[in-house]
Length: 328
Image 1 (cartoon, rainbow, N blue to C red):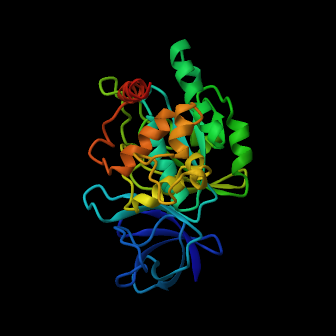
Image 2: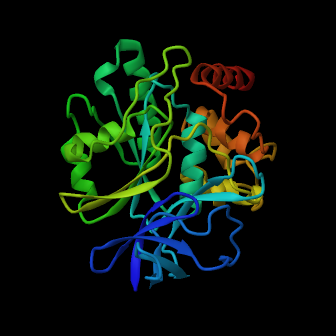
């Protein structure tokens, strides 16, 4: 039998079979995915082959094969630095939910996510949520952030789950697709899914006033069939996004605005850091490339993983200003 993995809880996987039945399955032996050092061999979205095990009172299944993935998105495993955790597979889009101050989403976090999605061939759409809560100064920050990413070519949406703004446009993009919602804890992923499909009743929690961070309500990634013909994967909130090991020379290729200028650099192995006649740095001087993006690039290039969970928007702005002053 063949089916799609809808939920993973570590040792058991909820699989929806081709005839629409949901069956709890486990893995037969150990799976070793070629070339993938992963903490989880099977992810939500995987197409799997399984056999029914009817030896006990409850019918369960045993997974014995995983079909080749169209794509998948990963993050570095929290405790095992050289391993990664596959968040979901076989995606048409990822919607990265962003809030400006409730909780704060930094440029650095967004850029790390985008680099990973670019590396694994997944289109990301940026969704600015809770726009109903934005006051003047914070609204300026949101519009600036949106401008930065639209200039590069990323599609951006502005939504309010609370007021229903932008929901129809979001649903339109999801029809007939398998998509994933991701972002920090507390950005409103579950609330947004509930706004589109009120009958789901996904758990939601308020933001912790003290830390301005969300509290985890989604423990495991889970896929849902929505009534308007879409599949959505709701994922646990991410505090930080560690970049999976990649060569330094590869990184700029996942910044589309850098990649477009690569051929104009004097050296074909230019890292856009200290090299002379670098087209990326020249564009930076002319404000054709965002300083926030360049800062993110340098942090990823230098492998500065220690602070990727803790940095904040104010620090980033200060650092960006400082770099700008050095150059002038």
